[in-house]
Amino acid sequence: MVKIISLKKNKDFKLTFKYGKKVVMSCMVFYYKTNNLGVSRFGFTASKKIGNAVVRNRVRRLFKEACRLNLEKLPLSYDYVLVARKNATRLKCQQVAECLVTALKKAKFK
Image: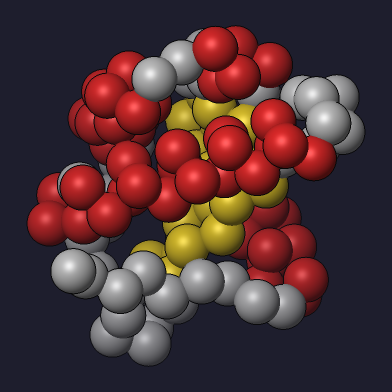
């Protein structure tokens, strides 16, 4: 099983939001920014607009699993932040993974 490295600090999230690029999808907003660390890091967020804590945690778990399944398609040395949208609450894991693959195709990596 492949380990996903998470973004921990609020500063890293804010830098990705401010200086990164984004792709808007129906179930998520996909932010990405280079990090020059040689390893990719991931952050997952869901606001209280999405639902209660159970729903928000489920969406974050779905995002994490979708990233783990598509890790080989993601370029290295990037910070990725996936922000949940309301539509993500009723999707299955496979549908979230397809949404992520579509976002990757739309993203313009260097």
